[in-house]
Length: 409
Image (cartoon, rainbow, N blue to C red; front, side, top):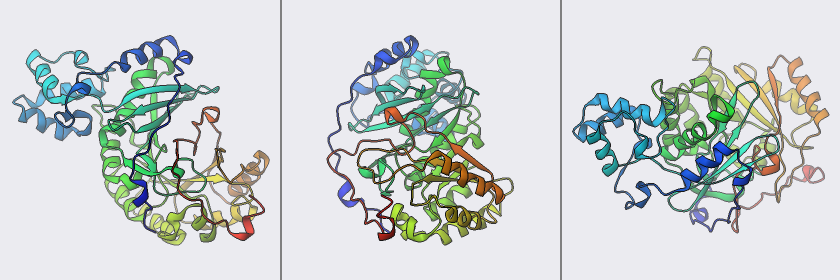
């Protein structure tokens, strides 16, 4: 099914966001104030400077040499941007670079791709950061603290999303814009810069924020490669997980070109249900999607896929669904992540009761699968799975509910 993007290209007025800086800890509040000040780059004409965080290391090295400087200085700059706990956002933070090199960067390069607008803090400690882009669009990034030292950044890859998944708030927006490589990478840079002192190591990244990552595959593959670079942000590839609703050609490309982890948002055990709640299934159905995964993953040792399964009461949570799921994933090295549906305005769906989720999980375990249950985080600030974004006045249409599910809704 073609992405319904024709009417979505218009950029719509964004809602005003109320400041919640009073909720920030003192250290984060100081950073908030400092980062709100416009940088020198922001005062320059659009397009007049090179965006450094949009380059991988080889591109940065070539750019530095083209400016008449040694390749070794490119590594020093790279570490200022991503390593050594610097995460430079302004020219004064380029410590260790010689005067002429810093002057050239000031005149010819931009260090920041995003401007932080606000931070909302949920009762469980989850942080939702609102960033504005150069064109005024707003994206959201979520920081999920973990007491066991596995704090996670949930990054966005698009403004809105064209997939129109019926249970997802972002999907109501339609696609507004693809994020650039720099706009994706800088979400991780901001997260470490703002919260490393407060939350400790931030070691996990999930591409599960706004957008369908594989619909922006070029920038997502490049951004994830920058994140795992050993001389830079140095995330472990197995701790950077890119999620897709099931774009099969891009999925195959990702498995061939990236060493990061893969997640697939499955959410149904029949084409009838998946065609409804995830329209992309009308183009890439369950048989094609799972057959591709089975073929590709069996060619690769030690690589698995994480299947995400949002539990929708009366829709995909029967014990027959559990039994079908066991059969569907046979021969695919995988783990299953059961996710409680997080309600949002205008939603048709209801979350599956906790006791039924446990019953569903137990059937899967008895069938030999490895299963996790993901707890909702940040839902009181619309920061939980499926709650990001702000549709505004224009929203994609809800699809017709199959007759047999109308009572459940």
